[in-house]
Amino acid sequence: MDEREVELGSVHDLRVDAKGARDEGIGRVGDFVIFVKNAKTRIGNIYKVKVTKVYRTFAYAELADRTNKFIGSGSLVEFA
Image 1 (tube, rainbow, N blue to C red):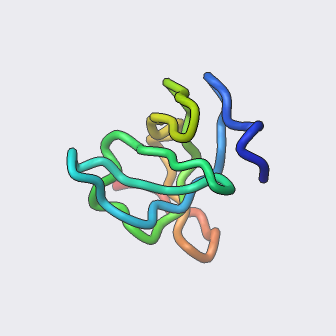
Image 2: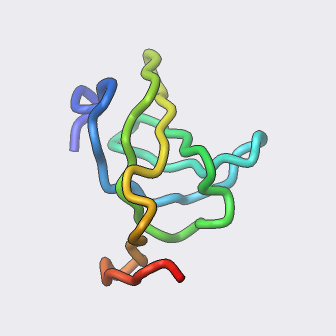
Image 3: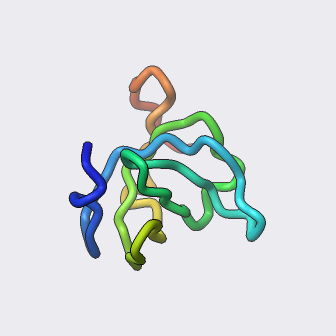
């Protein structure tokens, strides 16, 4: 995946690799860093996220599908 594909409103499958200073989840699309609101406790999982704000080297996103979560293997699990 290419960072040129990260644009406002785009949807990506993103692995949350770290927790940010403001308690957001952090992942990457290529070399492009994406901060995900409400994903601080979801490190290691893969989520479908929607980009809400784009800057030159990073972007902000939110969880696009709050009813399902994707686990590292890609298997689908329902939220309780």
